[in-house]
Image 1 (tube, protein in one colour):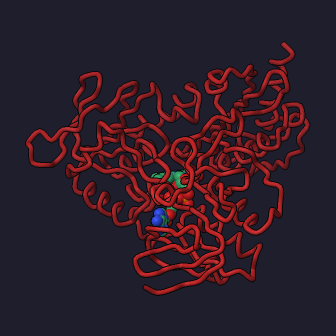
Image 2 (cartoon, protein in one colour):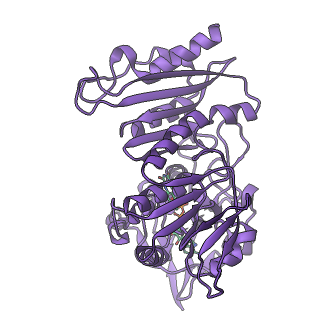
Image 3 (cartoon, rainbow, N blue to C red):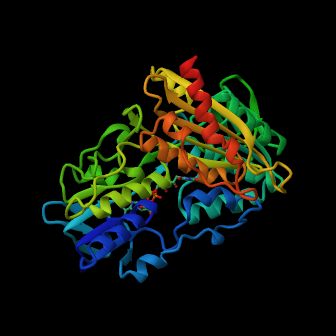
Length: 455
Ligand SMILES: Cc1cc2nc3c(=O)[nH]c(=O)nc-3n(C[C@H](O)[C@H](O)[C@H](O)COP(=O)(O)OP(=O)(O)OC[C@H]3O[C@@H](n4cnc5c(N)ncnc54)[C@H](O)[C@@H]3O)c2cc1C
């Protein structure tokens, strides 16, 4: 076994680990930073759905670049850490014993499969979506030869994969527990718009139901149907379980690191575990919601990267006051040519949490005048607290620009802006690029929310 020394050891080379390593090097250039990761070729997880259709078409076009880390002098080892001597600060892989001063867990997440369906993973044709190139290539090769695809789960990963498979000419059915798709990010009137576009692309949706059995009718270990709670049976040559992810914390647990809610590693505001030489970032850490402060199951590359920045800069001293306290569910997806973006809580989630809210919404165009080529509808919905006017959620439907506009709403939420602050916000507008200055949808939605407070 080879001995290796470093100052900071990062376990995991996903978005959280990568960003934590780069930030650590920027803040502590004299320190030796080492990242250990399992795979030579690391997929960009968020683009995995696009491997299955026409957009990318293969996993080779979806490899994350590690160029920046190498250029900065960050070392990388391939391998899996299987044990850590916390007291003596040594981590062990098959080949190496790595001495460290600071340790960052960035071990990510793994597909979650409900106990009742776990045994079906042994059947040929049943897959999950792990962030692992070899396994994704197996699914791609298997599904290329087959037609009937059933996707279990109506979250954004299930829907993005469904639409991609349909674009490749497959017969796709999505089975979801909620009445409409994308239930955790969009209120039903917006989810319905996404669902209509998905249905028009040829994907079928069975909502308000649940897969209870994955069937191998011929007893030859090959899946051919799924049975639903309603009694329906749907033919399936390929079944994809897109039923969520769970923190990958087996190693942390083994070496005695305390876990928090939903099995994530317990961390404080600066991503420190109880042992201040050990940090955890990304999907493997326990999170709480920015607004409700309740435990959160949100797992996103963007928020993972933000945590990586917080940890990487705070390794040896707290250099900046951390800007966010809790995870904002913030993400975008494309269904057909329409973008759907969401940040913070939905109207329904706010009501469920007992928050007294007002809603402001506005439908306009993303160019001005509307005769500009490429002009598309742009709809913004804001959710604000009735008492303070503070904005706690937003949803946008529109063109590609919503991918960045939602980040503006994310910052509005994170900065505790209220609707009155947004009503007087100064924005840049340009006919070819944005909505009109006279009816900028985010500002107009704030005005509409204010009207509700005054009503
Ligand atoms: C299909 C799909 C689409 C997604 N789309 C989006 C999106 O559009 N936007 C968005 O924000 N998020 C998206 N996500 C979520 C996002 O990918 C995750 O939140 C993100 O990958 C978490 O980053 P991470 O670095 O914490 O963990 P991971 O990406 O899971 O990386 C963990 C790393 O740790 C390594 N590792 C684990 N254990 C060990 C060990 N013992 N030793 C060494 N290495 C180890 C793994 O090999 C891996 O490199 C998507 C996820 C999937 C699966």
